Image (cartoon, rainbow, N blue to C red; front, side, top):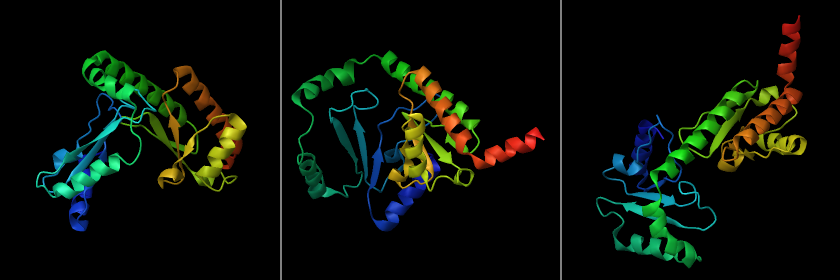
Length: 228
């Protein structure tokens, strides 16, 4: 996230007297920067959340942590105690992954991180480049993530009411499942995961292109105009 946007969020947190919540799980691509929200705040307490699922590729084990950045002891003891109690309300990670945590954090070679990031960046670029040429779609190149967000120009696709309808038909007709971004209160976008092998990314983009060509009314009109 850009420093300017985080600074605005910090200012809002001051106005409304709330703490900041900063998930810091996904890797960052080479050439991109990602500032820690805690490094930009001297007055707002920040909860930075991390976990093994993405950076270390250990999903499903429910192993994560919260770092408390509270320079002025705004939280005091009660909120810290509350966070500990909340963490104990459900069963956490099993003893196997807890026992392996020290080795995972300290003995994972740097090459593992670089290979993972290179793989994700390459697939993201392939997906972005392929979908950028599809009329009616507006892909957003990520700075570091395991997925790519794609905007939908709904005016070009009158067959669909919204992103949910669009993605439901996409999986029905093309067997490509994408998550409608309405799930994140971000309508008329969908999310495509880039953790699959490269050939599957290329195939998925090809199927999405076919789907859009079939339903893009504005696209068919443009093609007719060009033919004449």
